[in-house]
Length: 226
Length: 260
Image 1 (tube, helix red, strand yellow):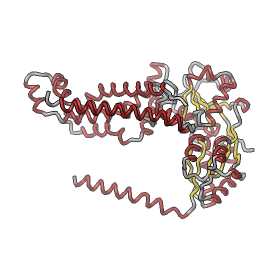
Image 2: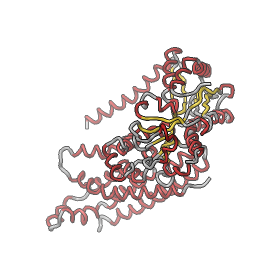
Image 3: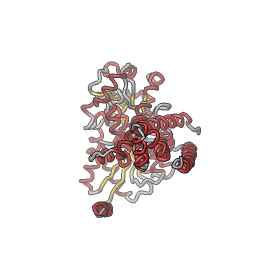
Image 4: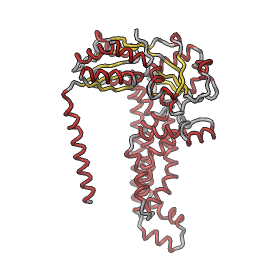
């Protein structure tokens, strides 16, 4: 019975990569959702929220089919790189981004929408461009929401199972994440190993969340006063 | 607001009413059968015919034999367990979860190497060696940790001295059906699956297969066993008797199983 640290390291890399990409992708999407006046905006909001409702199997199934040689997208990628994205780290990143998208975008846009419009108007009348207003006014006032969004997408990806099971192929060091490793151990009656691994994961996730929320409290206290 | 309240109430009513409907049909005995993934097509047909004949509902749950064994040991409410090997049923007997007297070998499974129908790989002449072809970047197998077909595939690769050369190309399906699906979706270029999958109606036109010679991997003798805590022991025994009849045996053979 040994703990598969490789699986931990891999899962950590996956979660960090995914939350970093979601921060980049999520900011403009959340900005648009918070401030757009388009009458069909709710359709986009519904699409963004879909992964919360959909079972990971549906997501995994579609991702697997989309990446495969039978789909135009998959063929295009294979012609470009010579291999399919399924069973690769990149494939897991794509699946996880879709899977965790709402956990980043929703807190982002909620905190953007909560920023006082008068401050944004003041920034504009002082001659700041919308981009400058975004980075100098909106983002600083939304730090707690941003931290929550990043923390949630990180935690959600750490604990991801269904999508990985369906598109990962369980390759050690490439796609065997901690959740898959624990599942395999339980299936193989290695309860001691499963328990040890699960405990480490539990402790790690708890520590991360405690750090995030304690940080967030400070952000709350300091943010508005600044 | 009013609208959403109404929708919510409708949803609640729906949720309350559905389980009720399911309970009405409980008059006929219901056999709950856990079965290895390679039986998904064959046993479904056998069970369907049997339901009409005997008036007993047969509910099938498919998965990797090791995974199902695990579930049974943790109290999964099954009456019968059709494994893809003999070891898991024996393990259940030894642990007291299954009745030794009911253990019966119903079939022998066959392992095949399967490639998509449009593949240029020359299965017929090269056989096992197609896994070395540079175009084969991913080879799907069932997880050898808990799927007998996965163990058979690894044994066959080792038998031909190929395992070390292709180990980094292996992708593991949770069970042998998922391994087949990895190939079918075009993500793996070849896979080791059950002959039963290659012959199943949904798969038949989609791939070409090569039977791995029987001496290359341990015999895939498959056993069924009745579970100790079952409430329908008589019905379970009757269903196993039916699986022994000529009609059911024909069905198993149609899907490539050998029946002694």
